Length: 160
Image (cartoon, rainbow, N blue to C red):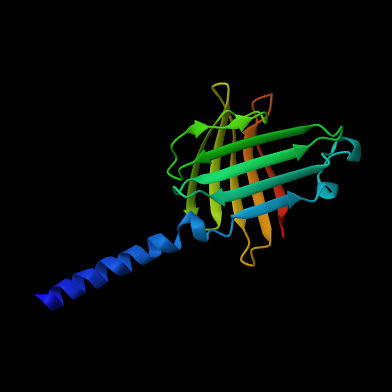
């Protein structure tokens, strides 16, 4: 009986290890990221002064995402959302054209984020981190004002 219990306990423990390895606490996404604004595909006078993203795990297991943009005139835009990683929609605060979001983390180095604003879908953003943990790529899927599907890729560097 003791042997059977030990075997079952071992089997359960082995099943739990992958779940723990995929937890947001161990995600290489966690931390602060910045765009090299000089590389943005827009005229220099239209480029923001800075764009930063921060990802953090909360004590309750939820994932916190913060965005801060410093515009060319020095004004700022920001957003903040703390949500579970199960796709459940929740509020986004701030003034960055999003008021609802949903998030999933299908792998420790991948975050999928869906945004909406005033009841209208806004964009889907997929964040991936390179194996060395130094580069974050954002793939943004959205629709142009004319209704055409658009994809945009932006690269961020980890801020020490």
